[in-house]
Length: 197
Image 1: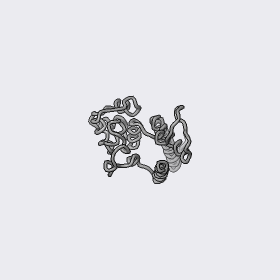
Image 2: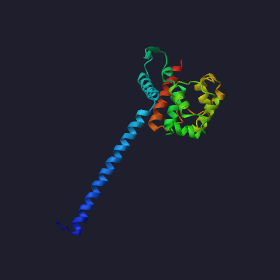
Image 3: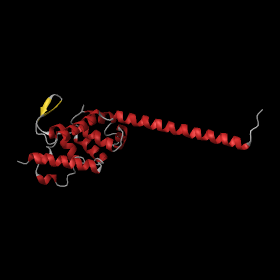
Image 4: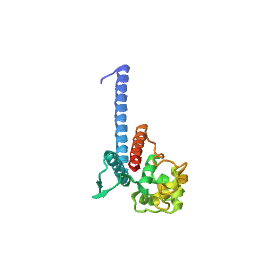
């Protein structure tokens, strides 16, 4: 029978504690990595394709020739960068860090998670104005913009200038970094310069 001193037992316990803390830390990092991976995989392919389209448009800046998307030629960069209602709703929900079920709960089940999923994937393209109003309130975004994207109202550029005063910019609902805002402003200047004779 080996008799160990109290100090040896204490050192053994301390070493065991250090190992347990290290293993716990590794497990937490592993779970966090799995969560991030699941989150990234859950991003809508439409949103990823929208980002790819924005990148393609930025690369084409300064080149007036035609370019292709899905095998068909496009005349303008605006055409390739235009968001659908579903893409816009998915990007806003992701920006707000809300799940489909959380949105359903916040709307008092006026908009089910299945219905919202169909909206975001483009299976439903023109929801009722009531649904759009509910989502605009939950996401704290412009109701008019949702009505435009759903096709109930003509785009802002087709309306009188006085109707646009006080209107929030398209990406203002997203929490953009200063670099992203600067790039969007440069892109806007490019688009405006193309329109001038």
